Length: 66
Image (tube, rainbow, N blue to C red; front, side, top):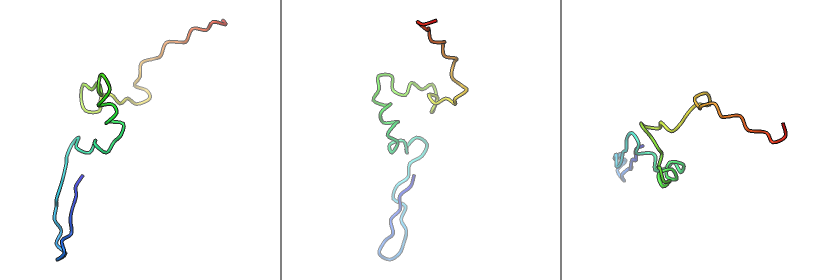
């Protein structure tokens, strides 16, 4: 993310940049996870995210009516 300023003479000034994880401040989910007891619980960048087929198989729910 970068910020620029156009001066009165029309010149463009680069005033700010952040890299890598710097833009996370604008992602509300990341800010909430950062305040959770285990944080994001990451082993590497964004490792807490999984695709739908990367989760372990959930145990079958016990039915009381079977």
